[in-house]
Image (tube, rainbow, N blue to C red):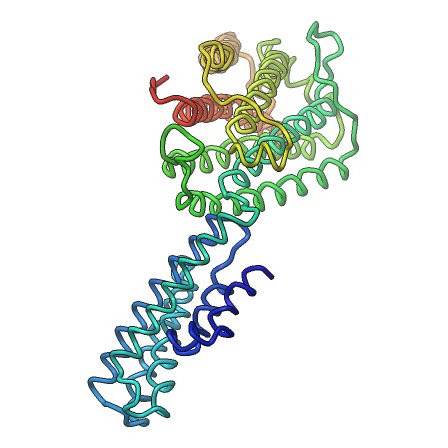
Length: 439
């Protein structure tokens, strides 16, 4: 309402209305360039300005070519609108293409009733002037009237995405606990609620839907935040490249979590709730199978990831703008970096690196033991059907492939988490200190 009121001044005040030829395009520019965030509004302003400039240029070319002939003017405008109608399908050109398509129509056909009273060149320049004035006023109002910065919305979105990843880790344990009994293992298991198969599938589908919604918003918010004056809040400029990489790394991490969920679900379908098949596989491989070790590693990795995700979420909460912390959260926390701020994070990353090496070596050693067991029994002239479970059992074959794929996905999950942590480490240092030290 405030923006409409300010824009109406250029229409209702006689002196301003005379100076800007009624000033209606200033009001329209003010109303059409607002967004949910400061960055979103700036993006719309940029696209409107680009579209207006393209449209004005073609409008002037049209006037020089056909003057005020209406039918010839239509002949010049139709192909122009057709071209930008196709460009409108591109997400980055959507609004700019719409403005560029209709601007020459409004300029060329709008001035025809006035004849030579308003020359074409003046009419085009007036349109540019009104849009520039409208955008300039819109920038001031956007920053002055309770601004919502895209960088704050982006950081909240990232925290929500990391929380979805934590929930996905919990769902993995819910499925694993149903598949593989581990009561005798001396490992403190993450406390999860036992759920039936339908509940687990519903939870996984909900997590996927929620995650993709958050990631889609993140892609847009990164572009919006890149146009905001972040030098007011951070020691270095906003790094679009780092945040774009962060989006892709979150996708990779959730993809690995979803892969593990899917593998466990498929194994469950293969055994048809018959846990003896798993025990038989372990017996066939002379207790050299990697199920118990995998559970231990999965629990340890889950604990590490939960600690990392909690710490990373706190980083993004810490580096939100002062305006957000004061007026939205009603808190004011420090943003100055201390030496011990990243020591715990570095320790977590070192542990993840050790986990990756351990998983890779453990998987290879397990496969070597299984193959050695098979070769030893073959050299003793035993029939393969006696000790190789998947010779005459396709389901056993699928289970072994699935468990091997789980090892790969678990190792890959640790690698992706390590890369994500390094990137977050870099972003945190860039935003909180003038000196950047690569980790």
